Image 1 (cartoon, rainbow, N blue to C red):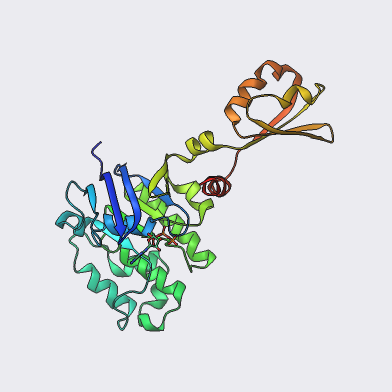
Image 2: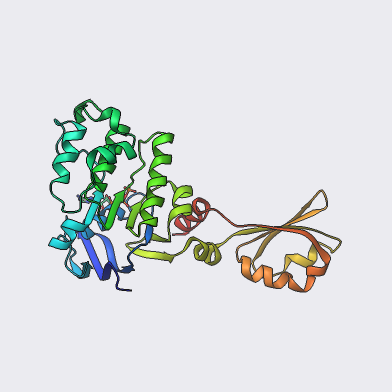
Length: 293
Ligand SMILES: Nc1ncnc2c1ncn2[C@@H]1O[C@H](COP(=O)(O)OP(=O)(O)OP(=O)(O)O)[C@@H](O)[C@H]1O
């Protein structure tokens, strides 16, 4: 499959402040990518390079096989960035109708407003909307051209629980339609569910690119529990084990290398009962990884 986005050895600095350093990535059509990283890691900067808002200092970057900001990108990309909408005096319906006129593949504004529960705001001016309502309109604006590729920068910030739920449902629907979505977010439980791959931006590079399951395997801290008649000392020196405790006849093992610990437990399996294993959430792994850095 031909990648929709390719970056090779891309670097970018704000003056002397190097933000992206020799970064390479490939994104295929239909992928949902969760771009995560600490505040200031460079997520928005990377989106800005991909959108052609800023130019990389060095390296090679293409979208749809052309440089960012090219004609194919303009027709096929939708974006939801942080900050205010440039036009605020118009109504929601007018804004979406004006935007739709720029695309040959545009969605029908009334239908989109119905889908995103914006109909009751249709005749309100943007200046009269709350922060969360504005975010929902900005999302509609990103979708209006029915783009193949979406860049969403912290899209759910300011949305209430209903709006967030509707947003994630829409992302799943976009995935089912084969759209490509690159999304930055600090809401890790959701991205853990939806993203095909997680990109962790750290120190100007992608410290991790892969599925959440791969991330769990690579960086996992696991908790293994079971009942056994064996002595606790049996488990203390096994690979990866950092702590062994016992409570109510249940042994709890903490490990920083779950796969190795599980392999080391195999010879004892016939003497272990009611074995459970808990893997870490993305949020917990994120905290470990970014602390280590
Ligand atoms: N216009 C600018 N001029 C100078 N430095 C900037 C500018 N914009 C961002 N930076 C710096 O570049 C770094 C990366 O910023 P960026 O906004 O890309 O981070 P981010 O990962 O999106 O952060 P957050 O999660 O807080 O949104 C930060 O250290 C930031 O202070």
